Length: 456
Ligand code: C6P
Image (cartoon, rainbow, N blue to C red; front, side, top):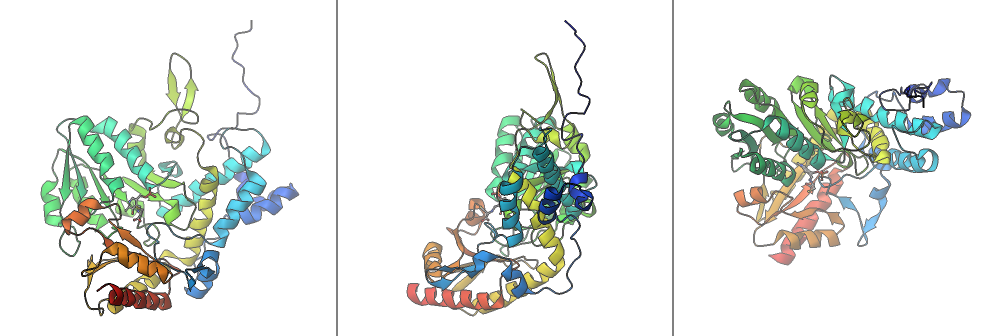
């Protein structure tokens, strides 16, 4: 029997060997079918920023905003939980399943190559979106939660030992608390918590005093989902680096509101979700500096993350595939590119300005309602108004608002320790997005007044 290893003449269709030529140059394609398909699916270079932010134009792109709820026009203010999707993303999802559905990084056949190319376009668009130095520093995950768990598991195995210390803050989402608690229990490390002020701002002096040579990682949210506080990310990172500790920023509530430059921040890890940035559910991002990702073991094992498997030994694939075991959420991965395009075209600075206007306007109006208390009054705030009506349970307020067509979130917002800090059961949270309007803020204020009249 010939023992010579069989090698294909054409290299196998693997992530490392594919190019994105067919996608980036649809005009050169001789295949008419693909030419027709690729234009709507992969608008590669639409990145010019619009000069004027026109909220009425933006709203026309979001079909769901025209529906009614309980007989009233929908006023969707639960954007911190998930954002609505523009037509561009919805159409791309339909196009994917009607024209392209195929597995990625595996097949030699035409559809598989197109799907792989489209999937990699998203990674290629994410690199400039957050200004990563390398495309392979972008790991596609299920979402923020998985991205943080990945770091806790892989960085933890490689770098955290008994006696080490980790730092989080009092305003973290459970996704940025529990993975570190589990890691600390497993490794015999200690988890420290940076306290916050009554306004919901980090106590930076306390933070500084917690940092020392035993600190192995700082994991802090960029923007608080329950308070809206924008934390001083650059300062947090500079101080941590001074003691040699890397920083993970939870950007779940930042990526859709602020322009993020990972190199300028010098952040080591950044985690965010596609569904909170007008993209599909089921895809998220972990950005990691190459030096950390290379030094970390794989997260999960299986297909895609390997270079070569024998029963004696397995070698791992290179970045980013080392951290992407198994079939990913292909549809979501591909269609996230359209959300990135959408945001890029409008311009994050324009979006932030519009949302800041709404935040200031609505806060001013709400504060005039007797018995209202806003929880989270940091100087630097983004797009979240958490409040309580004295004597009313947040749930009851939420139900009345819903009857009036206003969708808000009530409860602890997956930040139970934060609610304990303020000694409250929860809040009513209105979280804003680019498509909200001043008129909708008026509806919110009128609805809160009505709730107040009914409950108090
Ligand atoms: N916060 C909210 O209504 P996932 O579920 O993985 O996409 O995101 C988790 C997560 C992590 N960090 C922060 C700061 C978050 O706000 C969230 C999600 C939603 O506030 C759902 S609980």
